[in-house]
Image (cartoon, rainbow, N blue to C red; front, side, top):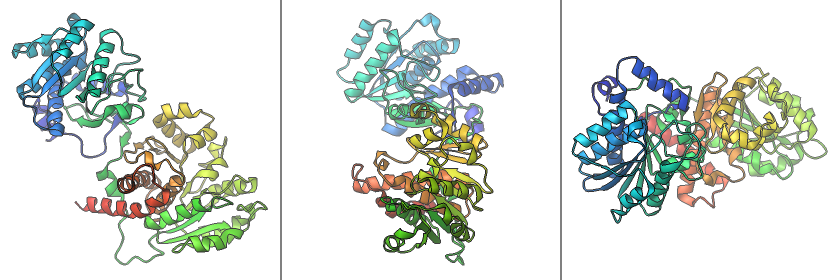
Length: 537
């Protein structure tokens, strides 16, 4: 359905097929206000489309609603108004609907009150829900409920649910445990829209239907675990202008490099990977192999001299070159000139995997980051070399991509890991701009940020990736995409998506608990191939 058609009808469009824009609660309120102030659509009509969209989304996801027993719990705000519309539409589709208002009818906003009156004019009655006893009686009136709809609070809520709203949350929690499918209108009650934090008791939804744009709380943990499947409906709001979006197959597929039929290995992407130290030869091996598996045509690995024979065995397709080392067998500052001679022949560089924190090695890292004439991925021990010196990262002739986990980001910024996790989107955006680098803040979810304020929240991946070496694989994937000519931001966000989706494929085949980083070396090329095919479609 086109935007014009949406504006001409109360029936909402289907979910977004591309990347979702992600907004804060305040940005969403402004979007509502500006849309209504424009005169193109009224708040009453937006509420009508939202409620009807909830019922349509339920039917799309779960099947026909005819004869289904549905409990709709509405709060005394606009979210409740959406709920009244949804209840009326569910009844029209043949469901047995019982709706309750858990609040004071007199306090309903004008549009919500109007939709409650339309609900009653359709011959439907509002069940008593003004106190805990009445609510308990309503819930007990059926031996089981097929669906329960959470229309209690919505995006603007903050803190712990109180009074009858808390009672409603408890009902929805109990029904969820009994097998009732729970559908949240806009946002599960008890989930913070901006940070994804949850109240002591929060609604756990199977499906969340939201409007105009996704909210941060839909994608940030722990809220992400409570939202279930998220559908974003176009109800005729002005388009969100947020610079924050999710990754999607369509957008990511368009970024996958295309190969000229005449290409040779040198032109397919020359990459230099720098790292390795005692006990950490696997890290640089994984990064190098992942780069080959991600399309880099010629991968050279610079490692400490005494380990060159080890890498000659570990690496088959890649070229390993021994470099001057410290007494502790880590790469030495004296290796700088020789490494730079290799770097000048390349198109991209990856530094840090298994590199050690030896002072001489740290100095080498800082020199390479400052002077290497190609785009570079900086990970692991190379990031540690910049602890407390993050502003130095952007003083380079070419783009730099940093890939810290929360611990490394804490060392770089001085912030605590809980602070970083709570505000991971803003942290990534802030430090990308401050350091003039692309930041890939790893975790659940990974956030990739550009210095200009854009950011992509990654949607792929699973807990099986929480194992040693997967970060090195990510470094290799991103570096290979850089070597093939992608811009730093695109290489970073595509790399994060491919890495997570390769992990999803590996888990489907091997299980979550037994996943090893090396399993991704088989699934990364298959993931890239699947994306290339999706682009063709």
